[in-house]
Length: 412
Image (cartoon, rainbow, N blue to C red; front, top):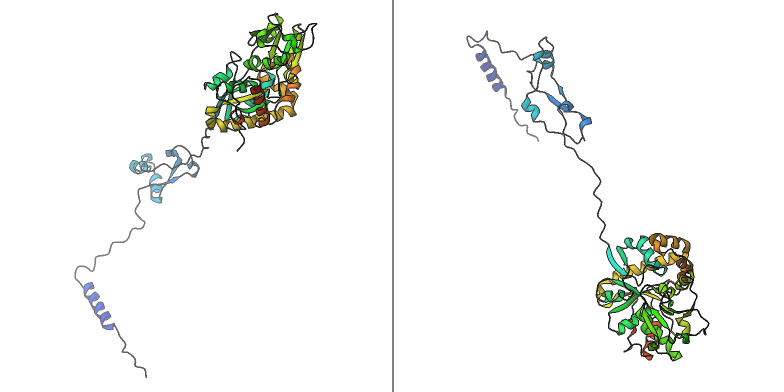
């Protein structure tokens, strides 16, 4: 059974409120007073709404005053429609001054990063620039080295005997020389070590003024012989003379420095021991001097590298990475020269115009065939055999181990 709650009512309260209102309305003196009427319109706001012009956003300079427009309320428009021009609405300066300029963003390309500095190697040649130095000259100028963070500077010695001595003293980073001179100077205590082969075959020879005598090295007896290099005087010449029973003391030896051809042309010497046999006979012929040539490897001298690059053994650890990059660039350049010999010659004489002589032009194909296609690779048997040859003939003192004569910089 469901029980219904009694219904609540607020009717007594409503009656009380109506009675109270009636009493208030009946107060004397207030019946004729009327409530104030509300205004017909809202009061003027007396301000301006500043609307920025969208085409000014993104400009680098702040938005000028002309870039905004005033939007007036209807009351302001009515006030300005009269004849009094001075009644035109002007926004208070304080409010207009508070408007901040529209922020802008400038987009520009970042500054380029500076390339890292190039590792520099100074290399002293064994002679003035020659076609046999082509790999070094072209590698210097063909852009291969900078890609690997390297640059080289080639210098010419004042005397052919100084490059390896300056290298031993730490005055240059690398030097160009020949394998026989390396054996001789290591035996004398210089800290030299072979790091690359530029020309892998001998370039040395004996050249004698042509005559009616026998075509034999025995003709050297009693002759005036000029030389420019220590290995020619102290290694090659004694080894060539010994089978003929001739002692070096029986010759008149003259250091002619760079003036090999001039010494023969001016009749200062009867013959020469040289390391440039591919060019000198043509030079002498152009000067009207007939000569005979003996290749050293055809007269008892073992095959050896005709031109090598040597480093200071005491500084090799800190230079090995740079040398490895250099030798890789030499290999790339040599491969290109062999593939494009004519273009290589044109680039060579553009880089070094002094190379462009009739003798060098004639010798270029022969020199090109002798360049080492793998300059880093070292023939350890060849170096060991040459060292043994010198030791057996008392041309060096102690027999030097091969690992103190040369190294392959690319080997692990």
